[in-house]
Image 1: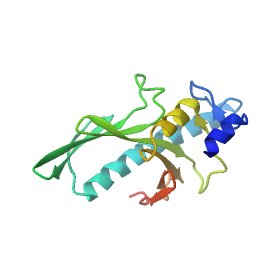
Image 2: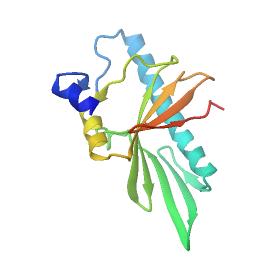
Image 3: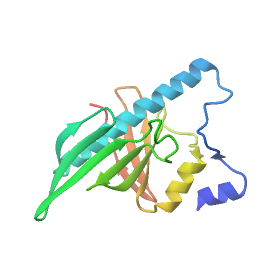
Image 4: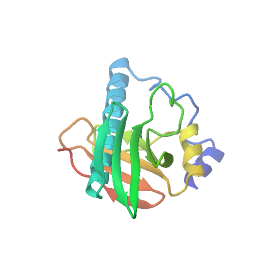
Length: 168
């Protein structure tokens, strides 16, 4: 609701394509991009560990996807945790998708900072559209202390908070 109000009042909604840190000196923009990419990989690894802790068995992985199997009743559930930010999926509205038996079930948008808190987070229009179209399935993963040994992730899903593990 807050995002809808912000949009209606001309607030912090970014048009697509995603912003390129306009107005920042190139070294700072490059550092922010690196922290963002690092954060996406950190959350991807976190989701793999979380599924393994829930009983799923990792069966394979590529640069973009991890494949797991979870015993489910009489059969097995196939799980894929896919990093979506490729040229093909650039404006998907989220960074990581969790597929169950081939169906996209959960969406994760990752926001990263090198510090221990966020002053604010910006969502693009495609991210906000995906969030509102997927209540209960769209997650915001906030990575704090990106690119450090103190890194951690907190995952938010429409008022529900799940804490993350520190970097190993």
